[in-house]
Length: 338
Image 1 (cartoon, rainbow, N blue to C red):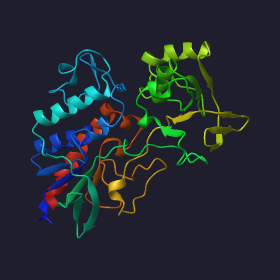
Image 2 (image 1 turned 180 degrees about the vertical axis):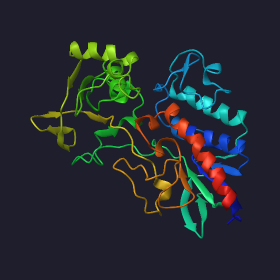
Image 3 (image 1 turned 30 degrees about the vertical axis):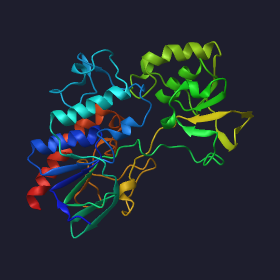
Image 4 (image 1 turned 180 degrees about the horizontal axis):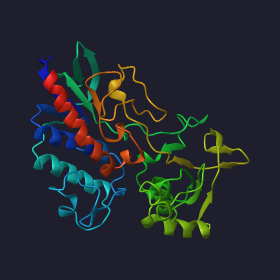
């Protein structure tokens, strides 16, 4: 086993939050290292490449760039909402441009804390130690499917995270479960290939009405409404699934057979690297933290990105960037006392 590498700050996760944290740490003169299980933005490399981001990436309204000095629209100016594969290109370019200290292909196997030192062990056998630890593992590693009897280990069931192409569902009868952008986008795309049914627990919420970025946005909503009105997508609200038997779905008032059931039901916090810790979390698996992102239980353990959940805007990039700078500022202040 290699000798432990000691740093002032270890950042786990090389996605947008981890990379921006590294840039902030560098500017603050902190000796840091980012550990990433794959390449820069690996979690974004594992979603469907053409998935559009929720936030615009346009000179007149840029809510996607990690830094105003290195905007995404200078690299990818062709559309106001970039796609996942374009965002991956930007993340890699951002890391290279700011010469971030990023250790790739270092999946974390364990994290422990002893005498105010955090020890991180990776699958390669390398050990890292630091008095402060920043978790930026986000949400993509933890797709959420409700605990419905028969849903787990069911070959007919998948999460929208693993959806790639409508062609995979050609001439199939498909149920999409969800009320957000992923459910809308997948249902629209499938409409040309499959017999599509869409259900949600509540009414669909549209951006044009609410102005909330995470609701179904204008580039999808009018088309979705038309497809529903024409019954090309068969939609019903206030639907509760009681249980599933293979492709047979039982609702409170009916039952139907499907070839595939796609749950577009979002994500919960990805805290798998902290399996040795007894964290207090909310129902979406976000940790209990202070306003600066520090754990209320473990001094020196910080969270950023979606994991530093303060409000619904914490999930989107421009939302969590606001708090991230303050988190790194507090880390720098804490290092003075270490």
